[in-house]
Image (cartoon, rainbow, N blue to C red):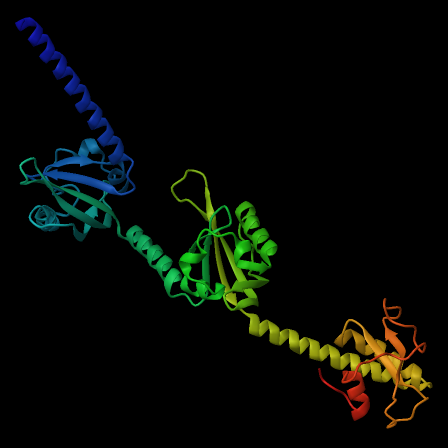
Length: 377
């Protein structure tokens, strides 16, 4: 019975030892896979852990670092060693994380300014048992903080719309400006197909997003006309859009996360340009119409020529009616005959000069006849 007990205990020790080695291997793999440099000290300030990122930044391997007491004599200047050691080990006595900046020495003699975050490690009895310290180069940390600050600013305070669209072309993040442009709350837009948010312009916008996912961002901003569905109704807007393809920085090869859409509403400016261009074109057409009509000897032909020239700037088609020679003006029996149409041969219209046009009472044509002037309707 004693022999069996001894064998059982020996088997348990082997099993416990195997588990301990597995846990150590797992811990080593986790530490070496971290993006931040990490080292740990026991209660006496002796280095117990040193990962690969720490080796990359300072050049000292784990074999060279583990077992040393503090950084004195190798990773920090002698004049700074005691201060650095005191500040790091002080993390055992205070709750939370302590942030410091130190100038450390690399193996080749260079200096690196690092930002550290250190915290105490309690032992099994709850008393301080050491300190862990994560550190990174200051410029890398500042770059990260700038990126985070930029993201938060774009999502909150930007004066243009920002929408992060996932690979399924559905909004994943929307800033306040974009939510106002869509006429909805930020949460209500998330995960919805673009076809539910836009009545027109969906195909153009989705085509642009798919192109960015496949080929990358276009070299210049793109202007798109869209019709946005809002609680107040459909609004026709012109957006000046920029696109950014988003890829995961953690993958070995670029993995698309979606597209960043940045846009500004330029409807008023574009509408003013369109109105100005239309007014300029109309003025030019009327000038050409007057010149062409002046060369016609027959007044009727001059009217038809003027109609043809002026049509392009004002309407899709135009009709020209003349007063019938039968009843005289003021007799109450004025009749208008269709004299010309542009373009000719419009379906559903009588042949010019064939029969009087049956305008109802109050029709703008009869109003113009009565006033001998133009009528706006």
